[in-house]
Structure formats: structure tokens, C-alpha cells
Length: 436
Image (tube, one colour):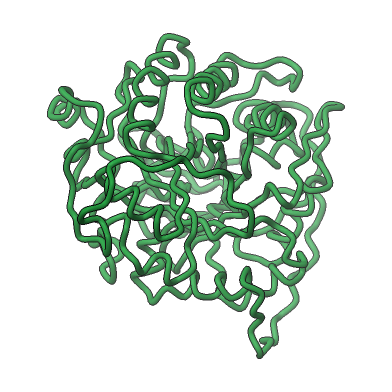
């Protein structure tokens, strides 16, 4: 989640061939607390009425990255015990023609839940959505035929596996036309996908979105290319009532508020400014996009290493307090990351949304007031001036704006300061890198 942090999603043609004979998972581990004997079908849940703690559940074994906790079944009782009441199942494989795969073996180490495990998890109090995309699961948004194939193949999976909604986490291929009143082909096809799924699922089927900040509030600086490209889509479904909430990723680099001020990720000021900005409404080219607090679930990394901009429980609590507890809840990448380091994110947020405030308030260094940035007028996408080349791209390395790296024979220029992680290779995360 960048979630560009979608690690080890290596959907190759060979792997796709292994699962080409079936669309729906029929087997999986039954290690959860209550899957044995559970029903294979259960009712679709409506939008949760109260506050939510939403976490991404990894369908593959990522213990090499967060060794404290690798794969866990979706009905593992610890998730609910540590406050999680909304699970995002990450991620199905999407083939080049748009075909969706959700089955054991669809990717390295994947073990998808059975329908009975899904029902067992829902009986524990979870609402479960399927998350579409991630950093390495792209879809060709230039093709209406691909969009239609996607809808035709995902709907049976959603129905057979008792999902309550879908989460749109597409992080590549979506661009704006430069005029917010005119949809680009990619924007129109993403709406085609969403409309197609919602039309075929029962009433009340859930919809959430998890864009990076560049795709949303980045539109306050300039609208075009990736900058603000989610805005027309968010507006449509927020205004028509179908959007459950926006779980924007408040990490993976600096971000802008509605006034074009820049904030570093991982700061209380940044979280507060972004959230208030969307509640008040962001106006771009005369069009206002408003996402009220009750439809905002800001996304933060669960632990150090899960993503850039990690915030300690004390900082998360301070941001929540400054917002008056108004947002619908908080989201994190990922549940598995959180469990690998003691569930500190979940436990803290559970206390916040449950009304229990920590008894001790830490003394914190005030966040410096951001300096307003000017609105670029020459080109639709701000391009930093390259500095001294930094060699071959590598994971776990700090990069600053303007650094130039080589990856796969192509030179890339860093557009947002960040510390790289596996899965954030330059061609996969264009919010961080541009071809130089």
C-alpha cells in the first residue's frame, strides 16, 4: 500500500498459465480460528456504521520482508483482537487482456482464502473488500475491451468469495487530460470498470479508493498527467453516494494541500492539512471536489519499513486529536507488517477510535510551517532538475529530488524524496521517478 509497497507481485505469463483453468479459489489453508465447518456463503455487509480501522491483508508469504509475521489466514483472530474491522484482500493478478485471477498459485507464495474462511472472518466482525491494483498489478486503462474483460472476470470472483466491496488501488496508467471537465481515456475506462462492477453486484456493494497523494491533492499544484488524475473519479462517486470512503496514502514522499503548500510525509501537520483540505473541498479549474471527514480514512504505514513517512503511535494520536477524531477511521499498509512488530499501530488506533485516549501526552517538537509553493505554468507535470547521477537504483536507499539512477538500462530522475523499498523500482512507481 504505494502503497507502492506492494511487494513480490510477480505476475508472469508462466504463473498465469498455471491458474488459467479457473477463476475462483476453491482451496486454501484452514488455519483460522473458526473456518472449520463454516458456511460457504454469507450475507454481503453494508458500509460500517461506526469508525473503522482498515488494514491490507497480504495473500502471500512476505516473511522475508517482515519476518516477525508472514502469511496468516484471513480469519486469524488476532486481527480483530488488535482492532481491525475492515480487511482489504491484496491483490488479485490481472493478465494483459484484463482477466482477473484469484486462486492459489496465481503468484509467488499466494494462498487465497476459501469462501468458508471469508464467512468465518466476517462472522468475527470484519468487512472484507478486494483491493485491485497495487504497485505491480497494473491494468491497461487505454482499452475499453480490457476494462470489459476485467469486469466480466472479477464479478464472479467477488460473488463466489463473499466480498463486501472493492478497493481501487490502481497506481499506474491513470492520467488526466489537462482539463478537469474532460475525461481522459484512462479516466473514462476506470469509471467504466467501477460502473460495470457496481451494476452487477447487489445494492450497497462497497467502493473505496486508495490513491497516492499526487493523484489527488497534487492537482492543487497542476492538473494533468498523474497530478490530480483521481479527482474526477472521486468526485463522481462521492457526489452520487457510492463511495464508502477515500483511503488516500499519506506516504511515499512529500505531498500538497489545497493551497499548494508542500509537506513532508510522516508529519502531523501534513496529515492534518491534507485531511482538512479534502473536507473543505479542493477547487481545480473551477470544479470543487469535496470528501467530508466521514468519507476519509487516511492511510499510514503500520511500522518502520512498511512505507515512507512512518509515524509513531504518539504522532498518530496527535494527528487524530488535532482532527477532533472526525475522520471515518484510519487505514494502514499492512496488517502483516503491524503484526510483525507487536501490533502497535492497531492497538493505538483501536484505543483512539474506541474513545480511549492515552493518559500521557508526549512532548513533541512543533512541525515547521510549510512554505507555499508556486503554481507551475509551463508544463503539466513538474519535473525536477537532475543533479549528480546516483548510480544504479537500489532498495533501502534514501533518494532526494533530482537524483538520477539507472534501472533496466533506462535513466530515471527522482521526483519525490523517499527511501526506496523492494517493489518501488522506478518503472513501477512513476509518482516517485520519471524517465530522465
